[in-house]
Amino acid sequence: MSKYLSDKYQRLEAYTPGEQPRDMRYVKLNTNESPYPPAPGVVEAAAKEAARLQLYSDPVCADLRDALAARYGVKRENVFVSNGSDDILNFAFMAFAGGGVPACFPEISYGFYPVYAALHGIEARPIPLKADFSIDPADYLGLGGFIAIANPNAPTGMALSRDQVEQIVAANPDHVVLIDEAYVDFGAESCLPLVEKYDNLLVVQTFSKSRGLAGARLGFAIAQAGVIADLERIKYSTNPYSVNRMTLAAGIASLQRDDYNADNCRRVMKTREATVARLKEMGFEVLPSLANFVFARKPGVDGEMLYRELKKRGVLVRHFSTPRIRDFLRITIGTDGEMLTLFTKLAEILKGE
Ligand code: PMP
Image (cartoon, rainbow, N blue to C red; front, side, top):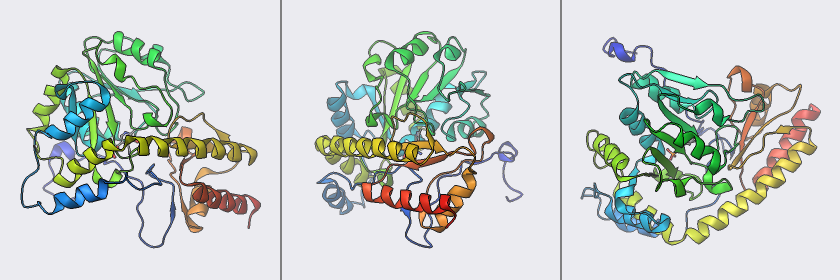
């Protein structure tokens, strides 16, 4: 830290993204990326735009928003896009919390939520999970603040039903309820159909997971026009060109082949079920996941030790040192082959080899 950093950031603790080490080739099961390449046509579409990089990208993102609107049965005015869903979450905290409005979110959830609150001087109200690590919708009724819920939640992978989300949205009519559906395409129920009915619901999704475009940085949000206009106001007050030309083209091409993306999601879900079964055979407790990762612990075995030993053996998973979840590993679902490597290395470690 330099002596010039503003007082308001002196105690800011930044988010720590999952490792992207370069010292060797790892089986990378730590950042919930897709193990499959982007849809056919995506790379070509992006490359074509690369030839026009002397020109700014379209700040309105009209073509991509129209493509998303057609895909989800809404209008362009209901769609917002930006540089990854992280960018949209940040804008939403800026737009809908602060100035006396706290930000409420599950205590164990996406680690960025408390960081956005701290960054913008927003009072954070973490809400504990139940003993089984699920979210209790009853804890979110009439909270008097902005609410952000990842559904499925991360890192648990556990999901609320659309009806449960609706209870929360209906019970907080004076504040925006943001449902972060980064992992929804792997089997959970999306609450997009509720957008029509509730002007305080903001649904955020991403191309990073189910469409294999994490490196392109593309997220989108769907809500009624007023909330979208608020997000636009923040975007135009920071960086109107937040989505680059290549990514705009990649997003449109990816939506044209959403059948390919859906096939890959089904493949991931199948591998997830096999992974859960295998981990349980090995004595792990695995939370019921509807995401492209599982959250598992082996009673009596130190989670950090497992993480470190797996890393030594070339397999990266995610470990959190938060007390309640310190014995868990969050394991991204890779290809069947990658998961076999994981099982082999886990068995070696557990046998003490
Ligand atoms: N929400 C959740 C719950 C996540 O786990 C992630 C991935 N780290 C994101 C949002 C952000 O994804 P992206 O910025 O790649 O769209």
